[in-house]
Amino acid sequence: MSEKHILEIQNISKTFNRGSVNEKVALKDFSLTVEEGDFITVIGGNGAGKSTLMNVICGTYPVDEGKILLGGHDVTRLPEYRRAKYLGRVFQDPMMGTSPNMEIQENLALAYRRGKVRSLMPGIRKSEKEFYREQLARLGLGLEDRMTAKAGLLSGGQRQSLTLLMATLKKPDLLLLDEHTAALDPKTAAKVLAFTEEIAAENHLTTVMITHNMMDAIRCGNRLIMMQEGKIIYDVAGEEKKSLRVEDLLERFRASAGELNDRMLLG
Image (cartoon, rainbow, N blue to C red; front, side, top):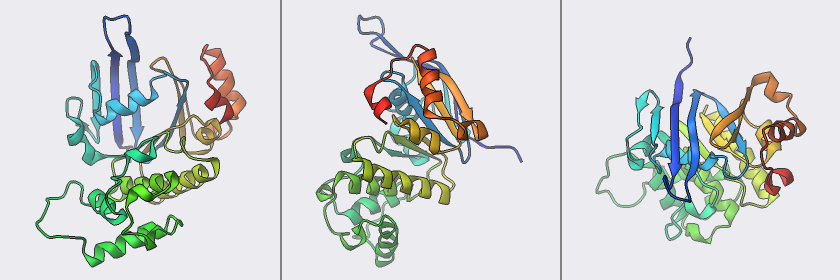
């Protein structure tokens, strides 16, 4: 059985402030194919193009050249809201994934009903509430007993866990994680990452995760890519990835004349 391409990025380029003194080439003739069920970790220094990659996949930024296909559909010129039905995304900032003035259960309902025809029926049905309660209980944070609490009252780790749940309630074709544990304390980050792995494996979610933590990049997923100056400089999968050490990645990075930042070293 042939593998299904969930994401195909074909020779895309993206330059900001073209023609000015602030011109910045973020992606240069970049290509990547993601197969169904892949869990790819992405590492690289500051300015390597990692977050730009996420933003062009989502349609936040248009590309200058090249093509992007999601599930075989050419989405290169589709606006961000038209791509949303294919994607789940969790940002680095825990405040970005939820509506702070809405209840926990209302946030979940918003995510669960995404893409559905809106009806005039008010409120959240009892069966829906039970479903949300079951899902929240899996987080082990006691949020199932606080479903009417405003999301803005939650801690960063609680909000990030809720955002992850919201992003995966309706199984997306592609889950994008943009350093989603970077703003959390180490203990909370480990918990959120463990839940990420659990939910991705259970639902066979195709996932691309940017991380600054080299140990997490090695341990998580089946494939690792290292980016620098808008290009992939290292792409490793399977048994070779499993045998990697942090020292190996550091050596690869230094060999390509990359600048190591403190977060990568501390991570």
